[in-house]
Image 1 (cartoon, rainbow, N blue to C red):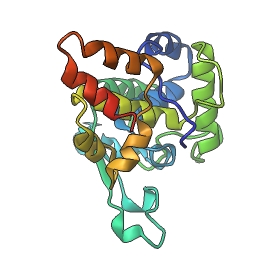
Image 2 (cartoon, helix red, strand yellow):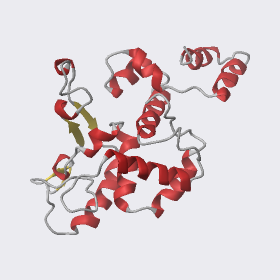
Image 3 (cartoon, rainbow, N blue to C red):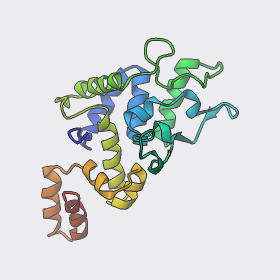
Length: 219
């Protein structure tokens, strides 16, 4: 998925502005992708019960994807793959609450149903359709070229945001992403021309350390 680009910081306000125009299912898929960093197939493997605690009658504080649903989790190297658990932050919890209420109202929540069903009852949303959802949102936001954006852009955006929020801690970002190697994480970190320019300019303003961190992501 090297060709897929993340959504950049200056583009995100336009995306968030148009997102409410889409069905709640599509909104939830998009926001969950931005805030958990799961791959499309992992997100689409979730059932309602993976985010809803029936006994507590409320949302869970975290969501897990089992090894079998992870990339490579069923191949010959599956023993090296582990399940991934991600805490649900405020943004994820808010959209999940709204989305599940739209599906079940105040009645019983059916935990065995797919979290993201297709229009055909009981059938799970496909990765192809998820890709179309992302394209439609980003098209409406004016981001343009579909060749560079897709469902994997959500995971790449998550990675970029985590890297920045951890003050450019590449090893912590690797752990959050569930990568075995830092080299894999580095491939996710797209560096724009403006980042390179800012890094050079920071050298003369006392921001040398930050400049070196930004520049390191280019390698």
